[in-house]
Image (cartoon, rainbow, N blue to C red; front, side, top):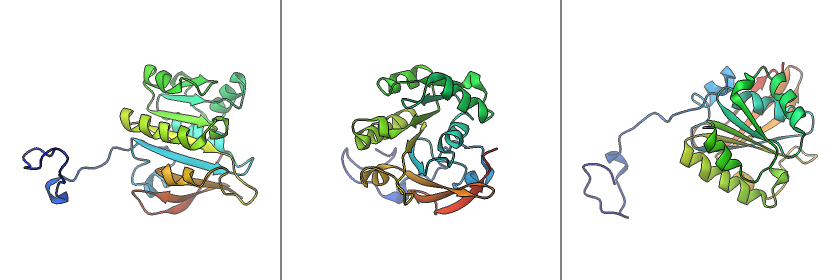
Length: 201
């Protein structure tokens, strides 16, 4: 209930009674992308990221997450490989926690006080939609951002249920570009969509 409002529990509240506040953001470190997103993705949100093989999904996402204390869940790659990918992004490894199994990642992310989590990838989940929705609930409870990497079809769209894009707060598609990779913001609940070109170096 809004303080000072006469609304009872379960009743509606006039939008004009709510004070406008700036949403807390988690910067990605990519200036152009953060500018497009009004300062980065909003805390408490999930980001669905996908692109064809070789577009740099893991490297770019690890880079975004490792700007803060983060947990990278990597059931599709060995621990040593995940460490190498994190290091190749220039991440401060003391901020990057690695976990090889999907099971239990939420408790571990809470234990290490992660501000960002990377699920690499959703294809390892028995039910991708359920995993994404669980990620969304955890992100909101912890005021963090969860980046969910998905595999892509030959056409460049994400594999799996169309519900994935429905439940994610942001949908980002990666495409090869001569200067690195083009990140297309295809959906956001908050800001306008658009595209930016990022370097993988």
